[in-house]
Structure formats: C-alpha cells, structure tokens
Length: 574
Image (tube, rainbow, N blue to C red; front, side, top):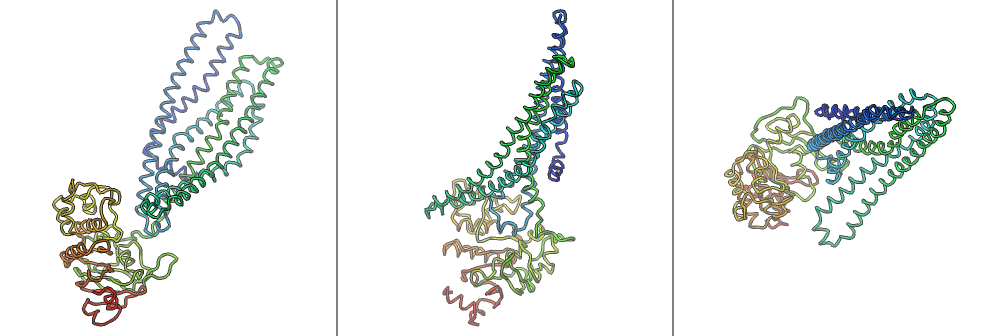
C-alpha cells in the first residue's frame, strides 16, 4: 500500500486524465448494470402476452440498448486511452527520476552493480507500473463497483436466491494464501531478468575478448543459465496463478448451477417470474465475472508492485557522498590543495592510504609515483570527492572540500582518467562535454594543445565525425588526447591526469608531454604516472609505497638521495 501511495503521488500531474478515465469507467459499469434491466423489461413484456400491441415499447427499449452500447464504446475508448496516457507519462517520469537519483549516488554504490542490472531497474521495473495504472487498478475498481451494484440488484430481485449464490464466496476467500507465493515469485523474476541483463551487457561490451579467447560456448552457457533461471521463476509464479484461475472458475460455476436448480423451484412454488430468473442469470454472470478475473488482476498487480518495490528501493538509497548542511558555493578558486593526515580504505578492505600529507601551491605541477596499488588513483578519487577520507582532511584554498557543495568543488576540477570514456557523439561534442557553449575555435584550440588537431582535421567530417560508442573508432592514444582536450577546454583551476600517457606511443607521449608543459603554471596539475620520463619537470614528485609517502622532492634531488624514486628510475632507465 505504501508503494501504491508513492506511485500516485508521483502521478499528480496526470490526475485530471485519471479522473476523466475513472468517470468513463463508472459510466461503462453503469451501462453494464443497466443493460440486463432493459433486457428484463423486454422479456417481461413478451411474457405478459399481447406484445404485438407493445412493439413500439419494445422497439424503443431496443433502440435504448443500441444507444447504451454506443455510449459504452465511447467511454471504453476514453477510459482505456486516457489511462494509458497517464500511465506511460508516469513511467517516463519514474525513469527520469530514477536515472537522476542514480547520478546522485556515490561511486561506492556501483562497486558491486552490473550496468545491465541498473538498466533493468530503469527500463523493466518501471514498465510494470504501466500495467498497474492502465489495467490492474482500473479493472479492480470497475469490478468492485460491479460487484456492489450487482449484489444490490440481485437482492432486490430475490434475496433468498442471492444468498444461495453467495455460498461459493468463502471458498474463494480461502484461496488468498496463494497471493503471497505469486508476489514472491514475481519479485524474484524481476531479480533474475536484471541478472540476465547484467550478463548480456558484460558480454556485449567484451565481445572482442570473448572471440579472441574462444569463450563463446562458456559465455553462451552463462546466458542460458540466467535465461533458464528467469523462465523457471516465472513458470512457478504462473503455476500458482493458473492453478488459481480454473479453481476460481469452477467455484463460481457452482453458483450458476445453484441458480439453475433453485430458480425454477422458486418460479413454481414462490411465483418467481421467468423474466426475473433470466435477469438473475444475466446479473449472476456480471457478479461472477469480476471474481473469475481475479487471477489476472492479481498477477498484474503483483508483478507491478514487485517492480515498484525495486524502483523505490533505489530511490530510498541515500548517497554516502553529498553536500553537508551549510555547504558553500566557493566560486572559482586558485587551485591551492592540501592533504592533512589523510587515511582511507575501501569498504570492508585493508587500508589503502595512511597518514598522507602534502601541499600543492596554485599553478604547481605535482607528480604521484610508485608501484601499482599504492593508492595513487585513490588520491585522485579523494580530490574529486568520489569518496571521503576515513581520517584527516583535504582542503582547497584552505576550505575543507566537505564544506563545499559538490557542484562547486567539481567546477574546480578536470580529470583525465586512465580508462577514458567517450560518448557516442561527434568529436566536437566530446571535447566540449564539460564546457557548454564552447565555440568551434575554442574546441580546435584545445585539440591543438592536446596534439590531436591534425588527426581530427584529417577525418572525412573533421570535428563533426561520429566516434561511435565509447570511441570505438579511435585508438587508445587518440581517445586519451581527446580526453585531455576536453579537460584543457574546461580550464578549471586543478587538472588531474591519471596515467594520461599510458595508452600512447613514444612520439605521442612526447607531444602530450609538450602539451602538459605548455599549460604548466596556468593551473594546478596533479599527474599520476608510471612512466617517470613524463614527470621529470614536475615541481614536486611524491613517492608512495604501501599507502604511505616515503619521499618528496624534485627529480634531481630524489635521484641524488638514492632512495625509492632512484630505484624506480633505475628500473625504467630514466
């Protein structure tokens, strides 16, 4: 019930459509209740005899029936179409709300989530709401009204016969224990389809690896297992719903048999008119039809509520990284950065950083070096506040980054990650991604700074060339340089380069190094590097081992010391 209330609060912009649809539904129900009454009147006239003289009345009643049928057709269109309009608009809004919430969730939320599973929440789980709003609830409402109306009319025709017809109802109520099983299996079905989506997404993204390592059969087995698990769960749910359906049908048919036996007896002994018996049978069909449809309505509602529950489960998840009360918008800062006794570990893991302290002056170029896994990329994630430190603090221009709004903090930063992500758009759109309203001249200037302009201009459509999903049409080095151009164009006070030269050849590395040197001094540069040749000119080199800083200084100074940095230089022959 709580999820239903939340859904209808979300549907507030379409209350008018739902109201008109509901009124039309009431009209359809009223017509359905009135048609047997008119039929009863016609039969009563024929039963009384001499109906030849009353053909005008019969004709009038027949035309009335025709008009009722026409009105019902119009109202059925209104209730069906308007409820679909409202329900699909609601689904669209839910998808937008859900995706917007995903964007606010912290990086830690995504550690154990597959992309396909998240997509299933946005697409599959929300689509079940359409069935709830457009079908299940309107039909349930119509059937409740129909039951109440028919029961009232039956009592006016013959109370004794009506009570006999109610004999099967307790048996129907006793079958409600199956509802919980149905919902539980539909919920599990939503989980299984999300897992299937996750496997498919991974496999489509890794198709090159699947083929080169000849893992087609093994991956097909994974998909087959997930598809079979989903089918098994749904079939179990359908077993319960389809067991319920014939059982409900059989029990309701008992009521019809009761009327067929008791009706003639009452007609003979109590003077019940044949027209009343016929009308009773017509209304009895309207009485039991909603009960017979119970299974399908239950199936639709359970499936929809299972989907809604998964949607609200995400919406009720709070981001671990968010604006603190009173967080400030700082405007543009100078780029001064300080780590003060910072410690950090990922959830449930060993410490990654311990007591990290260093200062970066505005416009300085600081390099972070050390073996793989010592926490260099983690430092960049803390600067961008994808995570918060467990101890100590990070300041920018003297202000704790946790006291700044996330938007304000990230306006100070640009990031060139090791694993570059490019969108399926044009080259210019990707370069201008972080700088809305950038001119073509500004985009080209940034591309020249990143040493990628010549390549872009050689493309058939130049800056308007579509690069494909994740930049599939580009080499690793080309993607890296477009990412650098994107960050250069943004012109933020702090630029973090996380292995920016990891995917390029020696010549391109030299060009990128020239680009980095050309912007050195204009903004604060944090450079994470394995190739030590790229950071020889850094103002400060910070050497990490086992999550701690073991050395700080300039290249020549550290080489002279003969410590950890000197050993790294010897390995790389720098």
